[in-house]
Length: 213
Image (tube, rainbow, N blue to C red; front, side, top):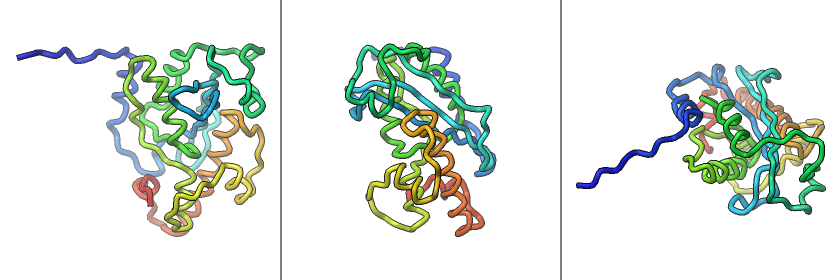
């Protein structure tokens, strides 16, 4: 018989992984709305440049509970600078990817993650975790594109950009294409979509928000 020693992980991962035991009501749930700026759109090849978050509890934004970090990166794509404006050098304070991931994991302990096209941002974080020898994210997720289709009872894979929905809901697009700015815009959009769902379903639950359709 062969004995396999279970893999040991650093304490910051264990603290994160052990934070998902409690079950909350929709009002008590901590939603962390987040966005990443990256060197490109291929999670396998591209890298994180910045992470920005906004926290929502009881349908209110908690301005004191947020995270913004910029990441040192040797891998760089000059073609994307005109979109996110992050230079390889520049005056921004940047930290190592490992430190950024440690801060992000601490920040999202026990939370549900919200993003526009959340699967891309999650994939970028998961690739960074893989580079550190760590498992994938454990948080449940909500995609505001899917949530919008839910308010319209539309079962389609049609792509709705963040710009599309901000224009539709008259959300002023300040700081577009910064991680923190896009996280804030997505948080406003999330609140508007939840309000629409609550108007249709007075007994709206967390399960309703998490369900794909």
